[in-house]
Image (tube, rainbow over all chains, first blue to last red; front, side, top):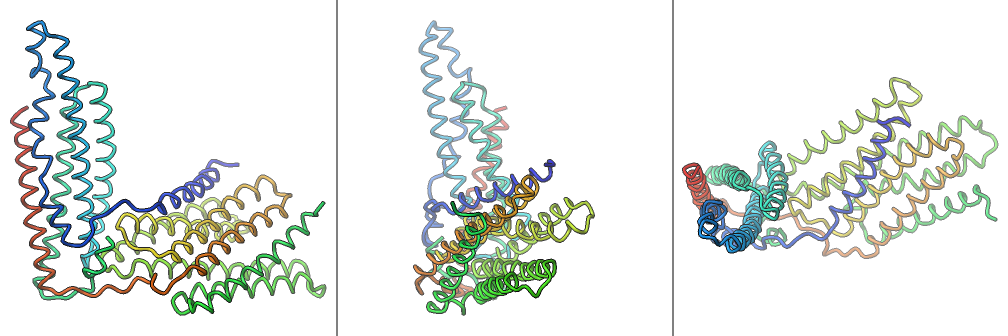
Length: 190
Length: 263
């Protein structure tokens, strides 16, 4: 049996697996349209990034070693890493909320730009992978700054894309067109 | 001890019975109006079962001619099944104009890529071209269904129980057809009875999934076509979302600058 044929069979098996995954019950989503605003108005965890970065700087706790408190320094660093891990969880939640809003917008929009949507899929995959990577780095006590900066820039990219999408929707509305889009009743299921 | 051929005949009889049961259920629930292609597909499958049974029992026909007719009817059935897949996708996604356009382009690319890959495996040998083409079409259908379900999940598009069952049945049958054809036909070339039997078993499983879904189908499951919201409300929603996003974006940019300064 040739390799291309084996790949074909593996692809068919993968499809069955993917179907099972896609049929799982969905995770709770943003409910009615007003929740979109509520989600947007929630306090942003990314505004704490500078403090988090500061606490992870080795120089910030180095003075304890010089003062002969090496054990205390290690405890403090461990605690700070735990805080950073919690922060990372919140950052991920925030990112997922942004994605959720972008999905709602895509459903509302009478026109969706494919490249932007695919870009968002890629971003969400990259974000998930980076989050997992960063989490392990924190657990192992490795240097993490570049990772945090990368995640921040991803969140910015998402926000920019959302901005462009909402501008387009606003323009459509301003032109006075009434596109056949999901109404509030239907949004309840989103 | 039951002979393999007897087992196959029993499975064939069971399949036809289940097909008829599903047909009656569809008529009773009046689902033929909502899913005309599925209704047509089922009708084609029943007619194919009858035609092939009559042909194989008849002694007046040449065996090769019967085999060719049987494969021609199979081609028609596969074509009808591909129409069912299109109908399913249209029913689920066409309510959402924006993502519907994107979905069409995406699924077309997926289907074309899968069929092209599969046809490339026949290396220009025409006798394999038709068989591989059939397999390619089956795999393309499975791939498009899975892509559609992943797409619907990502955008949280509601999919009712019947549509889910339809997707499961179609995808499972197509996937197992590809696996059966690729593995059994090539490795165990002599075991064509087993190959046919496994194919029938897969189809029986799909029929059972569909019968169960039609039995549980309720009119209220139908997702109503969403009414358009007014331009004023739309504009208000958009500008509010826009301002929030701008604020968030500004915060993030400030943070990035802070970080740069820190370095």
